[in-house]
Amino acid sequence: MPRFDYVAIDPTGAVRRGSMDAADEASLIARLQRDGHVPMRTSPAEVRGRLATLLTRDIGGGGLGHQDRTDLTRELATLLAAGQDLDRALRFVAETSTSRRRRTVIERVRERLRSGSSLAAALAAEPGSFPRLYIGLVRAGEAGGNLGETLERLARLLERQRSLSLTIRSALVYPTILVIAGLGSIIFLVGTVLPQFVPMFAQSGVPIPTATRVLLALGDAVRHGAPWALLALPFVILGARQALARPRVRRLADAAVLRLPLLGPLLREGLAAGFARTFGTLLGNGVPLIGALAIAQETLGNVVAVEAVRRASDSARDGAGVARALEAAGVFPPRLVLLLRLGEETARLAETAIQAADIHEERLGAMIQRLMAVMVPAITLIMGLAVAGIVASLLTAMLSINDLAL
View: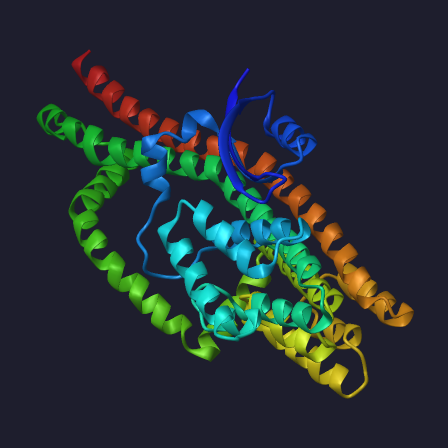
């Protein structure tokens, strides 16, 4: 039976650390809860050795990443739900944190709270760690007197965002490895193996087949051009980033990406899921409609989608509603527009937006699985045909030499 390390709060309110054998982490959490403890962190014991501890500690500078922010929110929500006051909850989280950066940020937030600042204002003083969405939800929770529930919803939001991001990244790992391996094999054959046969062809006096000559020329280009290409790559990336920093170029690029045959629908589903989840969470925590739209558009990352939400905000300000303006923009999938219109008609816009987010996240996951099911065999087939073509070209040239010898 595996062993797990844990950090929990015992019935007296003290922080307890220890190790325990359990079938899995869910069993460990259930056992701790039966004993009256509030679990804060669990992990397999074998990865919590000295090396893992060194790897999880980072320098004190900089802001919190998404992972640290998600863990902090979840732990604060758990502690507040267990009856701890905010200052004590922050102290517990700081004491049990293995990240120096996170501990430093929490301590600065605690100092501002003790100086009479609200939590939202204390977080706003750390713009590198807490985005506007986060601060807006916390401010709404403090104003409504339900900070614990707000942090719980915020933790779920961050966890869903992380899960969606991990799903996409995990799906891209295998195709990326296939492409890198295939391109590496092709470059090795064209740039290293084929040139070894050039002296043999020259000595035989046999005309080299056209396909082989093309591959030899390609090999020469790879050998002589690769160093220059590597030197030019940083400048190309820098130039592309500077070009995308221009609003007109960025808009054209974002619009073009949304029109791509396979990637476009996938991105539209992702934008719909992210917008609906953020928008619904903000409304559900008491953020006004216009403010929720203004905050939600900052999380999209696509200029065309941002413009669509901005027009929807103007429409809502004029009393015309959100769904009609989003439909006119034609950026988001029709299903999202339909559900938002239904939410407006039934005065349940927050709940409907969350339901729309669930639907689009499921559709996005299914689309990714279907795309990977097609992409992996396609990449394998293309790379295999390319390598087979190179080998066949080489064999054809060798057979022509043998025919001359006979």
